[in-house]
Image 1 (cartoon, helix red, strand yellow):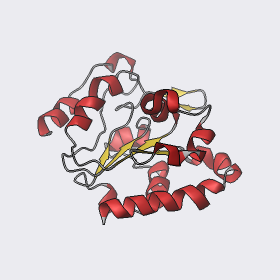
Image 2 (cartoon, helix red, strand yellow; image 1 turned 45 degrees about the horizontal axis):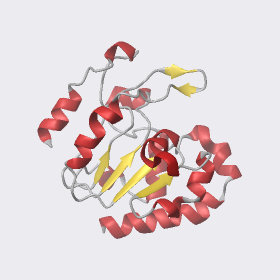
Image 3 (cartoon, helix red, strand yellow; image 1 turned 90 degrees about the vertical axis):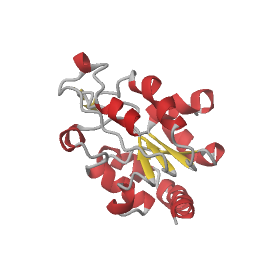
Amino acid sequence: MQSLHHEILQCTHCSEHLPLGPNPVVQISRTAKILIIGQAPGVKVHQTGIPWNDASGKQLRHWLQLSEEIFYDATKIAIVPMGFCYPGKGNSGDLPPRKECAPLWHDKIISEMPDLKLTLLIGQYAQKYYLKTSVKSNLTETVAHFEAYLPDFFVLPHPSPRNRFWMQQHQWFETKVVPVLQSKVKSILY
């Protein structure tokens, strides 16, 4: 796993498409129990090299009921985004994750983590990639049917502050989905 991690950190596969250059941000360990697959690092995460080191990460840790200490413990939590580097700014937020990373690295990484008990698929990019034809017509429907993807996958919306309106419109997420998520995470880690 250590050599694979080193290889990922040296990756320049799509550097010509990255406005801030390559800086792959992943957190992996052979003993991880939970895998978090999100979109791609934002600017702050790119600059610090710490995954989910922003407002989205704070919200995600709140949903999971995890301290920073546990969240950033690679022996428990693996963090492998769909795109490992900051993809650049788009018209309404960051650009989508680069499409090269997941096919190039995900299978290699996951095959090195035999103790995984749960994979969180955060946002539509991860959900479409992993759920393929079983993904619903939109993210809301996919998240509403989260139980259909258990025990292997737990589907979540992106915890970005930009999704405040979605959260307000779908309060069932906080009352019905988040408690199940917290219970699963607790049963795996404690």
